[in-house]
Image (cartoon, rainbow, N blue to C red; front, side, top):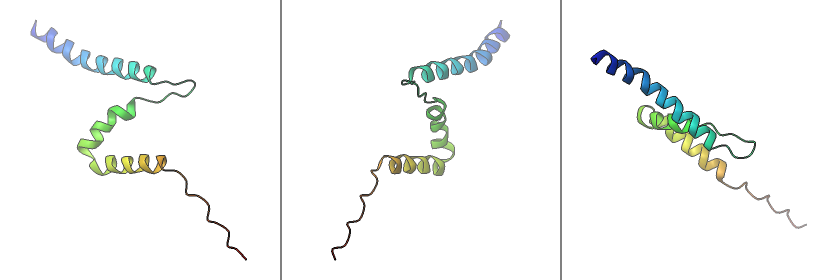
Length: 77
């Protein structure tokens, strides 16, 4: 009986994780553009085990959201 509980837990957790990933990826689709949910789920792992990668990704997102610089004015002659 104990082996069945362990087997159910070992096989059930990856199945549950795959189900949550699939549900999240289907829910986050907007129009024709689909965003993957894997990045959000793996972001937690990056934050814990690779903080430099997590920080670099945050900086990239901030830079992507910043508006483009306006063109320099032409000098008056």
